[in-house]
Image 1: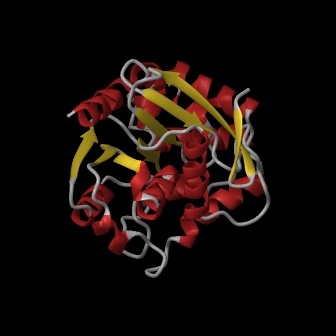
Image 2 (image 1 turned 90 degrees about the vertical axis):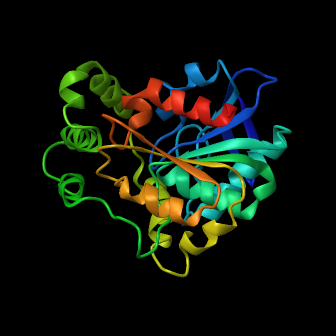
Length: 270
């Protein structure tokens, strides 16, 4: 199993695709390891050198105790790239991974050739919060854990996705059964988003310093990080385009991987 020691932890990573291709780094969201990209990686690997890894706190990467920050996990990512001798890379961060990607491009702009912000926001008091519908479902602790997880998936995906794709939902549940959430590192990751809720800590007013080309991509029906955040991000980032994926929710990497890949390939190759 490939691991590197970076930023005082052991990080599990995988490299797929063209060894001489443009590097593309994928940063997963809250509570997920690199499995969340498994439907997109085969298509992306036909065009790029794809680096997927497990964030601090999940999967096969170390899970040290303590509060995590976006800057800490951005430093993990930067040192991973340095150990792998990757000088510059396109970076895609999804949801919480988008916080990490924003911290990385602001702290280490020399490492990021192009930026993809996926179903994320800039934090602070001005972002569009989770919808009341999604919050009600995600905060409902009644029922057994698997049923709660299933409810969370259904509200996070596009309307009707679960009913039309029972196989995907079952695969997803099986993944979570095999990889249960560990409360302490999960809460440490959750602290990343919570720490960005203040005006002082959020990225909103710093994003105008981002100079690399940026793609902002959301699912049309995202109730967890509503697509209104796409325009708010676009107002702050100078060199950006926005892509809203139809018939997709928060987990578009698993809902519409082909459409997501098409948007990414078009952006990175333009």
